[in-house]
Image 1: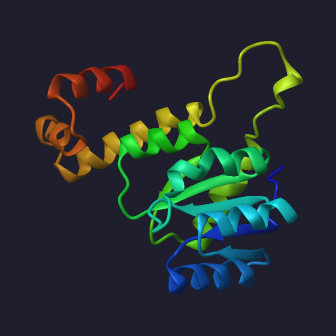
Image 2 (image 1 turned 120 degrees about the vertical axis):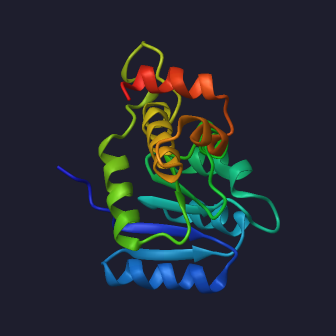
Length: 185
Protein backbone atom coordinates (compact mmCIF):
# COMPACT_ATOMS: atom_id res chain seq x y z
CA UNK A 1 0.00 0.00 0.00
CA UNK A 2 1.41 3.37 -1.00
CA UNK A 3 1.88 5.81 1.85
CA UNK A 4 0.40 9.12 0.75
CA UNK A 5 2.44 12.29 1.16
CA UNK A 6 0.37 14.59 3.36
CA UNK A 7 2.91 17.21 4.47
CA UNK A 8 5.95 18.75 2.82
CA UNK A 9 8.65 21.33 3.41
CA UNK A 10 10.13 23.09 0.37
CA UNK A 11 13.55 24.66 0.94
CA UNK A 12 14.61 26.83 -2.00
CA UNK A 13 15.94 30.37 -2.36
CA UNK A 14 14.05 30.98 -5.64
CA UNK A 15 10.81 32.62 -4.47
CA UNK A 16 8.92 32.07 -7.73
CA UNK A 17 9.86 28.39 -7.99
CA UNK A 18 9.19 27.73 -4.30
CA UNK A 19 5.72 29.31 -4.28
CA UNK A 20 4.76 27.72 -7.61
CA UNK A 21 5.68 24.24 -6.35
CA UNK A 22 3.95 24.95 -3.04
CA UNK A 23 0.75 25.87 -4.89
CA UNK A 24 0.96 22.77 -7.07
CA UNK A 25 1.37 20.54 -4.01
CA UNK A 26 -1.47 22.26 -2.17
CA UNK A 27 -3.79 21.71 -5.15
CA UNK A 28 -2.98 18.00 -4.76
CA UNK A 29 -3.98 18.01 -1.09
CA UNK A 30 -0.52 18.31 0.46
CA UNK A 31 0.03 20.72 3.35
CA UNK A 32 3.15 22.39 1.99
CA UNK A 33 5.29 24.86 3.93
CA UNK A 34 8.29 26.72 2.58
CA UNK A 35 11.65 28.03 3.71
CA UNK A 36 13.98 30.38 1.82
CA UNK A 37 17.18 29.30 3.60
CA UNK A 38 18.73 26.14 5.03
CA UNK A 39 18.48 27.48 8.59
CA UNK A 40 14.84 28.53 8.17
CA UNK A 41 14.01 25.01 7.01
CA UNK A 42 15.81 23.39 9.95
CA UNK A 43 13.91 25.59 12.41
CA UNK A 44 10.60 24.71 10.72
CA UNK A 45 11.29 20.97 11.09
CA UNK A 46 12.04 21.27 14.78
CA UNK A 47 8.45 22.29 15.42
CA UNK A 48 6.46 20.32 12.88
CA UNK A 49 7.48 17.05 11.19
CA UNK A 50 6.76 16.39 7.51
CA UNK A 51 6.48 13.41 5.16
CA UNK A 52 8.58 15.04 2.44
CA UNK A 53 11.52 17.45 2.46
CA UNK A 54 12.46 19.00 -0.88
CA UNK A 55 15.75 20.90 -0.76
CA UNK A 56 17.60 22.81 -3.46
CA UNK A 57 21.26 21.99 -4.07
CA UNK A 58 22.46 25.53 -4.81
CA UNK A 59 21.56 28.05 -2.14
CA UNK A 60 23.26 31.41 -1.45
CA UNK A 61 24.08 30.88 2.24
CA UNK A 62 25.05 27.23 2.38
CA UNK A 63 24.28 24.55 -0.18
CA UNK A 64 21.64 21.92 0.37
CA UNK A 65 24.17 19.10 0.11
CA UNK A 66 26.02 20.13 3.26
CA UNK A 67 22.74 20.38 5.20
CA UNK A 68 21.31 16.97 4.24
CA UNK A 69 22.68 15.17 7.31
CA UNK A 70 21.00 17.73 9.60
CA UNK A 71 17.69 17.33 7.78
CA UNK A 72 17.96 13.53 7.91
CA UNK A 73 18.70 13.66 11.65
CA UNK A 74 15.63 15.85 12.28
CA UNK A 75 13.37 13.82 9.95
CA UNK A 76 14.60 10.21 9.77
CA UNK A 77 11.25 8.94 8.44
CA UNK A 78 10.72 11.62 5.77
CA UNK A 79 11.45 11.20 2.09
CA UNK A 80 14.21 13.70 1.29
CA UNK A 81 14.50 14.83 -2.31
CA UNK A 82 17.31 17.09 -3.49
CA UNK A 83 16.54 19.28 -6.51
CA UNK A 84 19.13 20.66 -8.87
CA UNK A 85 19.43 22.26 -12.24
CA UNK A 86 23.00 20.94 -12.45
CA UNK A 87 22.57 17.19 -11.93
CA UNK A 88 25.23 14.62 -12.59
CA UNK A 89 26.18 11.21 -11.22
CA UNK A 90 28.82 12.42 -8.71
CA UNK A 91 26.31 14.89 -7.25
CA UNK A 92 23.66 12.16 -6.99
CA UNK A 93 26.12 9.87 -5.20
CA UNK A 94 27.16 12.65 -2.82
CA UNK A 95 23.54 13.61 -2.11
CA UNK A 96 22.61 10.05 -1.22
CA UNK A 97 25.71 9.62 0.91
CA UNK A 98 24.70 12.73 2.87
CA UNK A 99 21.11 11.60 3.46
CA UNK A 100 18.95 12.35 0.41
CA UNK A 101 16.78 9.56 -0.92
CA UNK A 102 16.99 10.77 -4.51
CA UNK A 103 18.04 13.66 -6.72
CA UNK A 104 15.64 15.19 -9.26
CA UNK A 105 16.26 17.86 -11.87
CA UNK A 106 14.55 21.24 -11.91
CA UNK A 107 11.97 22.10 -12.95
CA UNK A 108 10.18 19.20 -11.29
CA UNK A 109 6.65 18.09 -12.05
CA UNK A 110 4.57 18.01 -8.83
CA UNK A 111 2.92 14.70 -9.75
CA UNK A 112 6.29 13.07 -10.47
CA UNK A 113 7.68 14.46 -7.20
CA UNK A 114 4.76 13.04 -5.19
CA UNK A 115 4.94 9.65 -6.92
CA UNK A 116 8.68 9.42 -6.27
CA UNK A 117 8.31 10.53 -2.64
CA UNK A 118 5.50 8.05 -1.97
CA UNK A 119 7.59 5.29 -3.52
CA UNK A 120 10.54 6.28 -1.31
CA UNK A 121 8.37 6.14 1.81
CA UNK A 122 7.15 2.67 0.80
CA UNK A 123 10.77 1.50 0.73
CA UNK A 124 11.40 3.06 4.14
CA UNK A 125 14.55 1.97 5.91
CA UNK A 126 13.99 -0.16 9.02
CA UNK A 127 14.84 1.45 12.37
CA UNK A 128 18.50 0.93 13.35
CA UNK A 129 17.55 -1.40 16.22
CA UNK A 130 15.39 -3.64 14.00
CA UNK A 131 18.24 -6.01 13.18
CA UNK A 132 21.86 -6.61 14.04
CA UNK A 133 22.93 -6.84 10.39
CA UNK A 134 24.59 -3.72 9.06
CA UNK A 135 22.17 -1.48 7.19
CA UNK A 136 23.27 -0.29 3.75
CA UNK A 137 23.85 3.46 3.52
CA UNK A 138 20.79 5.60 2.64
CA UNK A 139 20.00 5.47 -1.06
CA UNK A 140 22.48 2.68 -1.85
CA UNK A 141 19.79 0.54 -3.46
CA UNK A 142 18.75 3.49 -5.59
CA UNK A 143 22.29 4.23 -6.81
CA UNK A 144 22.30 1.33 -9.30
CA UNK A 145 19.04 2.64 -10.75
CA UNK A 146 20.50 6.15 -11.09
CA UNK A 147 23.62 4.84 -12.77
CA UNK A 148 21.62 2.65 -15.15
CA UNK A 149 19.34 5.56 -16.08
CA UNK A 150 22.30 7.92 -16.61
CA UNK A 151 23.98 5.38 -18.88
CA UNK A 152 20.78 4.87 -20.88
CA UNK A 153 20.33 8.63 -21.26
CA UNK A 154 23.92 9.08 -22.41
CA UNK A 155 23.55 6.27 -24.93
CA UNK A 156 20.30 7.79 -26.27
CA UNK A 157 21.93 11.20 -26.56
CA UNK A 158 24.99 9.76 -28.30
CA UNK A 159 22.93 7.69 -30.74
CA UNK A 160 24.26 4.47 -29.20
CA UNK A 161 27.93 5.32 -29.70
CA UNK A 162 29.70 4.00 -26.59
CA UNK A 163 32.76 6.24 -26.89
CA UNK A 164 30.60 9.38 -27.13
CA UNK A 165 28.36 8.22 -24.27
CA UNK A 166 31.45 7.64 -22.11
CA UNK A 167 32.61 11.20 -22.80
CA UNK A 168 29.18 12.53 -21.83
CA UNK A 169 29.37 10.58 -18.56
CA UNK A 170 32.95 11.66 -17.91
CA UNK A 171 34.29 8.10 -17.77
CA UNK A 172 36.64 6.00 -19.88
CA UNK A 173 35.11 4.05 -22.78
CA UNK A 174 36.37 0.72 -21.35
CA UNK A 175 34.78 1.53 -17.99
CA UNK A 176 31.45 2.15 -19.71
CA UNK A 177 31.79 -1.13 -21.63
CA UNK A 178 32.40 -3.01 -18.36
CA UNK A 179 29.37 -1.32 -16.77
CA UNK A 180 27.20 -2.21 -19.77
CA UNK A 181 28.35 -5.82 -19.57
CA UNK A 182 27.57 -5.88 -15.83
CA UNK A 183 24.13 -4.31 -16.41
CA UNK A 184 23.40 -6.72 -19.23
CA UNK A 185 23.28 -3.95 -21.85
